[in-house]
Image 1 (cartoon, each protein chain N blue to C red):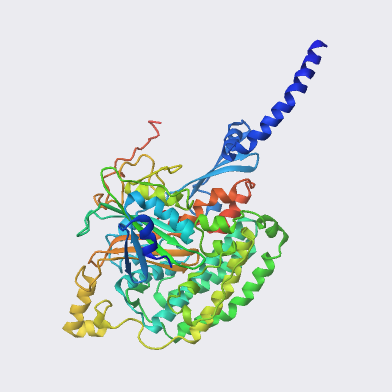
Image 2 (cartoon, one colour; image 1 turned 90 degrees about the horizontal axis):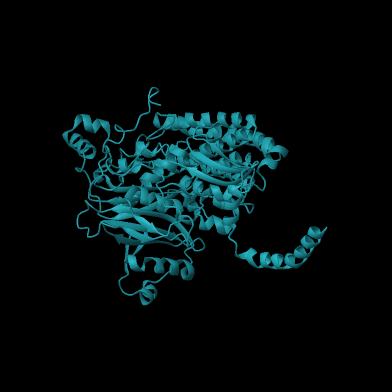
Length: 163
Length: 431
């Protein structure tokens, strides 16, 4: 089990640990995210990135940051799990990519970009993945309405006469 | 004559220099560059595979770059079935959203429901009743068989074997019947609820499961004899789509795909949930890492699932299937709703939004071993009876992202073999 004090020695006391049920979480400022993750992978054996996702805290009571980005890590040998959380804010939400550490982040980062508009700098192929290329909004943001903004109604239709 | 001599002379002088330079530069040239060069050659052609193709089973698209029949590169395009499930999860309450998670992996709808409510119950800190744990375990294992049966059947079908598909499909019908007896619905059951299930099961149901357990091994043996040593089937799958253990970990493989590459990981054993702690079963692994190993792992898992169901059905505890009514999380029994004002109020409060129970302002990730691999849900609670964020960790998504890696330098006809072996369910892929 990776000790928080060991990580704090290396990355400073900004790291905050919390836990809920059996989930163990470490909050880290975005500037130190990549170094922490690469140290967790190389020194502490977290060799699998299970999931990478984001939360939009726009309507969340008491939240200070706009987006939370979560990296769910797993040590395959020992079965230990760890969630690393960081925060990014508008107007320019961006984070470094972890493609050099875990290639499984490829589509996961693309999905977070597609749904929340968080840019992962250095990602080899950061395109929309689930939404169409010409889509302009980010649907999982809280300011995007459930019914959409009329994209379906304004969909370009090619008629037989016009083609 | 002079020209020829001159040519000879320059060739003699330059050849070693060129050769040495080539030897020196060779290791520096990235492999991708070589492939990009070959992609520019005019005999390289592009094939659009899908979105509508019988072998994709659902709607997904691959753009294949081919050199003759050799696949140089494959680019998957997904999103054709994207319907905003995660956005809907933020607007439907914990019990309503179960109808949506049903439709993710539609080969094993109940496994999704169990995974979803597993995460919700972890957030709410609910301890299920022993009967409910066993019931859900039996249903989860039936769903594993259901999923594997279709996957194995269609893999054989895509590779030209029709009989195995029909044999297995008949067994799926029996599982449909069992599920229908329990929930009243064959396919999209919406059977689980916060703290329990919709209806309890009866003795007839238990006998129907017993009958299935008795009949299944014969069909299994038939298909085993049809496929496992079938020369054509083995030739089409052995050595195809190899995934090394290191790549499996790095690319995020889980479930049967990872176990076929020798990763000994199964959440049922490593992080036991429901009743798996009490039951005896083996984790099936293989070292091959190819399509054939994935076939073998899935085949053996059918028998392991059968073993689990057999133990669970004989030891299913009696007692209530839902947690206590005074938790305000489950619906009270109908007689008390119709005949007493307290029961009616309680029913009303469970159904109406934000009347019933306390939801912590916290976030939780919980995963189960679904037929396809680790199916996790990440829920952010916001003191409402619906999720503030309902993230699905879909195994198909991670598995399909490794498809270009698996298919590289194989033949065009291997595309269907690899697609079948990683069991892509597009509704779960796109959500």
